[in-house]
Length: 61
Image (cartoon, rainbow, N blue to C red):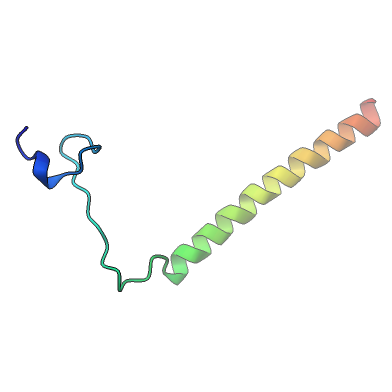
């Protein structure tokens, strides 16, 4: 295959993988904030789901 040496064997054709240098921080502060925000959103969805489930059991028996 032409150009297969430049990309990983599992990557689709035309997509090259790039490794980060180890001295760079894997998660900058804004990335951490975005992850925290996503986690809180997902947690709130789970809490609302379970509160609705328990309310259904209590009121609709």
